[in-house]
Length: 358
Image (tube, rainbow, N blue to C red; front, top):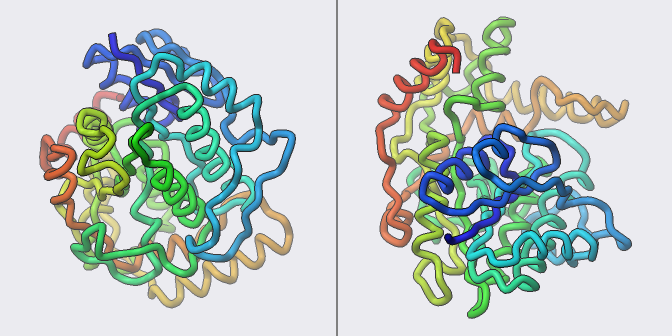
């Protein structure tokens, strides 16, 4: 039986990937920072490990720059690398899904989780002789604040600056991962956009909470954006697993992953609200005002050392006020990934699951 390891197996995407891998007959090992008895009950061999834990030396990196900064972090933390390598023994592939997401937090936390953690995964994969690494990235690594409409992977590069630590460190981590691609370790990066579906702990809960509090505003309801259902995002990873090999067309490349149906922002937000039994929202807010408020709140929160996320940040304002949808034909060509159902069909599925208490 083929064996794979999934970092971040306890997360939204990681758990969906673990379930699909098991269904295919793969032996699955999972790594996460917490306990996930439900996955263990399904047959996932779970281990607790913090990929970004502080080792004997401190990783480098600096806040504020762009992905042109050095992505070198060093895989310091020999104990963590050794532990990872032991878990990877006999694995035919590693899915590196674990990451620290969000729009607010300290640079060192994001850098350690996303950049240092990725360096350790690469080092451990080499030590264990793993031949394939599928890295989970994000389209935000190429979003510099303006509209991205129908762009292909080769059309865009990392921007010179980022408005949040998450896209910055994910860009550094993606560069690090893809640079590791060679004849011994084939690497591919997937960029799923706005993952949603049953059990979503991020997108839908935030929309619902703000709508319930009367604080949800649309910044650019007619701008189109991509999204991807969690089960399709997970399946894209298995498609990459099937096609990835040294010298394969996908080796050393990054791919946008979505449902392939960009929807207007207002339509998508209200469709997700409807699936959760909420009324539509039509109130709007000027993108310029939102960006200015975000900048002000970021300054105030940083000044007092607040750990809670501000109601608005520059990154969130940019994401909500710009178009970001992508040409996903390369994923179909090189990975064989085509979404299995439409956005409307998946939304109906989500509404049924929510109504049933899932």
